Each structure stands twice: as C-alpha cells, then as structure tokens.
Picture 1 (spheres, protein in one colour):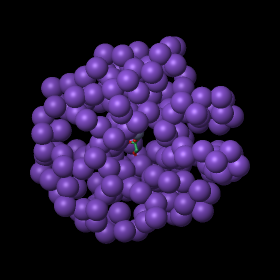
Picture 2 (cartoon, rainbow, N blue to C red; picture 1 turned 90 degrees about the vertical axis):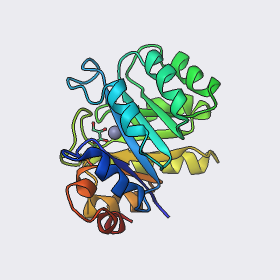
Picture 3 (tube, rainbow, N blue to C red; picture 1 turned 135 degrees about the vertical axis):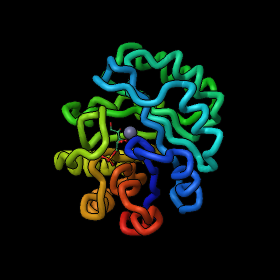
Picture 4 (cartoon, protein in one colour; picture 1 turned 60 degrees about the vertical axis):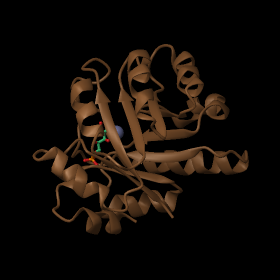
Length: 211
Ligand code: DX5
Ligand code: ZN
C-alpha cells in the first residue's frame, strides 16, 4: 500500500491546531519543506518556528532540504530523530552530505528537480535509501504536476527491481486524487501531498482519496 507524507507548507492559519488535526489522521509521515532562499528563491520555516512546530508533531518525519549547503541543517535536524532527511542531487558536496546523514543513523534521500534525468542517480543508489522525484519546480506548494515525472518513476522502478535494490521511490508536487493514481500505477512508494490535503477541512478524507 502506498504511503502518504503530508507537507505542512500550505497550511496558512492555526498551524499548531492543524498539526494536531494531522496527528489524528493516518498519514504515514509529516513532510517538512525547508528552503534557504538560495537553492530555491523562497524561504520557509526558521529553526525557531520548526522547533515549535515539532513539539506538537507525533508522526514520523520526512525532511526535505531545498538548500545549497545542507551541513548546518543536517546538524540541526538530526536532533529531531527523523525517519528521512532528503537533500538535492543538484548541490555541491553531495557525497559528503550523504555520508553525514548516514553517520547519524538517519535514512538518506536524494531528490532530483524536474529537469534532472533519473539515470544520474544510478551510481549512488547503493548509498541511499530513498529517491525523491520532484514533480514541480521546488519552491512552493499548489503547483501543477509535471507529467514527465511518471516516466522517471517507471524507469527507476524497473531499475530498482532489475537490480534487486530496496530504494524507496517518493514523488512530491501537484499530487491530487488524479495524479496520485498515475504515480501509484507507475510504481511509487510514498506520495508527498500538501495543498490537496491541507486546503480541505477534512484531512483524513483527502488522504483516503490519495490512497
Ligand atoms: C515544493 C515542496 C512540496 C510542496 C507540495 O517545493 O517540496 O513538498 O509543498 O505541495 P503541493 O502538494 O501543494 O504541490
Ligand atoms: Zn517537499
């Protein structure tokens, strides 16, 4: 069964109250989108804000670092005891940062932007636990799903199966009740969804639609 990771990026008001609402759903993970204003034009949560938020979260964490230089972020977020920390393929010092996450006994994810080919990851798949395929340009919630992401999911699924790897495939951006079905049929393991879930009052109903 596909897993759901709910992004809290698009929750506008009453953040803490809504996080407590999310804790009561069966979302598998809560997804933190962290931006530095450099790797992507926007910024999202500050360390103080995310510390406050995290005091209320009871679900396993799936942390997505959209930052050029993840080292200080990894040092900060390791204390949250997350399930995954995902960094971007497109940064400098990728291997060094993969190593740093692993040394802290946290599962490592590597994400590719829509214009990065999936094949570039083949040589590092044995070093990582998860691939995050961005199906929108990283930087903000509520964008439209980019369809070439389905080909990337299918190609990677075949490669993982053929090579008997355990790498998890996650997709992020523009996931709704229609695109979720196509991603599931293409072989995805985890769907990240923000606005489709949190722009509705009934989070659990939206999660049920995705599954
Ligand atoms: C985009 C983020 C996503 C985003 C998902 O940069 O990585 O996690 O918040 O939001 P939706 O589901 O609204 O596209
Ligand atoms: Zn994300």
